[in-house]
Image (tube, rainbow, N blue to C red; front, side, top):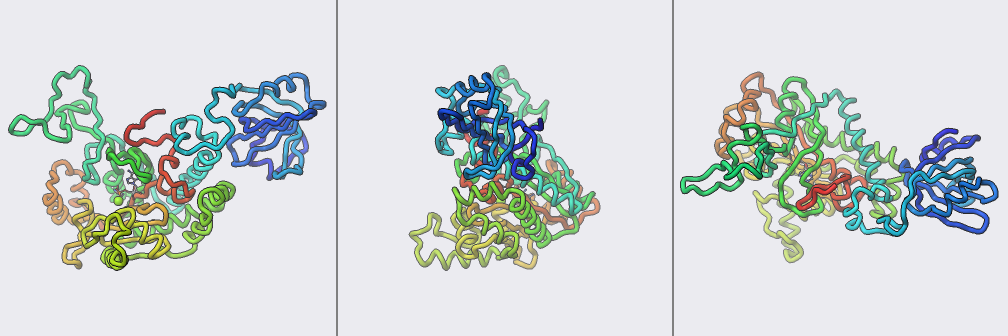
Length: 479
Ligand code: 4AD
Ligand code: MG
C-alpha cells in the first residue's frame, strides 16, 4: 500500500488501499462506527477516516478506545468520495496508534487557543492551523526568493554571522565572547581617564583576543562579492540587540540582501519591486488553500491586496514629498497622532509609514532620498540636493510599514572617508571595505528585505512572533 500525503488525496484518488500517517485532530465514536480526523501537516485540511466496527480487526477496535486528540496514527483504507464537507474520506480497514497522547496533559486540547498562549508552547504550536499555514507559506516564500535570484543570474553568497563590523552603526550588536565570564575575575574592560568603565562593555580580549559580534546585516560582505561577481544576494540570519517589544521587531531575524554592481538607486527599487511581485505571485499560485484560510480568519481583503501587489506598479515618493503629505494630514487634527511633529529630518515612525502606505497611497510605496543625518554611513550622497540627502529608499507596505531598506552605496573613496570621519568611524576598522573604493570602484546598490515582515505581509498575521518558528525577543530564548 502506498503512503499518501493528505494534500495529494484530492489530486489522484487511487483504487487500492493507501496508508495515511499523521496526528489525530478529533475522534467521534458512534454505536457502529467511529470517525477519526487525521492531519499530516501537508495541508490545512485533515482527512476523515471512517471506521465501521464490522469491517475492522479486533486490534483496531481496541486502539479506537485509546484514541484522543494529538495521538499519532497510521490508518489504512480506501479513498472514497465523501458526502460531507470534504470531497474525499478514507474508508478504513485498519488503525494503529503510533504514539499515544494523554488527553488530560496534552496542552493542545481540541479548542481554539490564543496566539499568545501558543507562543508559550512553541514546540507544539506547528500542530495548529494558523502556525502550520504560516510555516508552509514561509517555506514557499523562501524557495521563491531563491528561485527569483537564481533565475536572474544572481550568485548566492553566505556572509559570516560572527563579525567585527557594525554595518548599520546603530550600536545594536550582540557581543560574542570566548572569555570564561565566571572565572575571569575582574573583566579587562576599557576605562575612561577617571577609571570608570565605559558604556557598551568593551572587553579587551574576546574572540580569542579580538572583539567579535553577531552581524546586523550581511551587506558589507555582500558588497565585496558584488564588486567581483556582479549581482549577488545573501539570505540568512541577522541579529539586533535592541530592547524593543513591538510586533515588528525580533532580536534574530532573516534578511534577504541583494547587491548589484554597476547599479544605482533606481535599479535597487526596480529589483525589489520585481522580486516582490514574483514571490507574492508564487505564493498566490502555490498556497491558495492557506491564503484562503488567512483571508477567512484574519484579513478579508488579503488575496485582493496580494493580487494588486503583483499587477499594479508600486508608488515612488520622495522623502520631501512624504513629509509634506504628512504635515498636511497631521495639521487637520494633530491630536490623532502619537508623533505629530514631522519635519525634514524626522525618522518616520510606524504610524507615519502606515498612513502613507495604507491611506495616502493604498499601495506599496518606495520613499526615497532620505536626509543624510538619519541614515547609515555607507549611503551615497545626493550631490544635487545641497548635500542634505542620500540615495536611500525604504519600501513601505500596508499593514506592516517598512519592509525593505536599501541604498546606492558611496563608491567614492574621498567622500566615504569624509562621511566616516564625521561619524567618528575609524577607517582602520573598515580597511577592507575602503579597498573596494581603492581598487576598481563601481557604482553599486542593494537592499535588505526583512523576511519575517514579508511573512507577516503575505499571511496577514499581525505579530512577527508568529512569522518565525522560534521567535527571539527580549527575555525569550527558550526552545
Ligand atoms: O533597514 P535595515 O536596518 O537595513 C540594513 O540592514 C541594510 N544593511 C540592508 C541592505 O541595504 N543590504 O534592515 C533591512 C530590513 C528592514 O527594512 C526590516 O524589514 C528588517 O530588515 N528588519 C527587521 N526585521 C525584524 N526585526 C528587526 N529587529 C528588524 N530590523 C530590520
Ligand atoms: Mg531601515
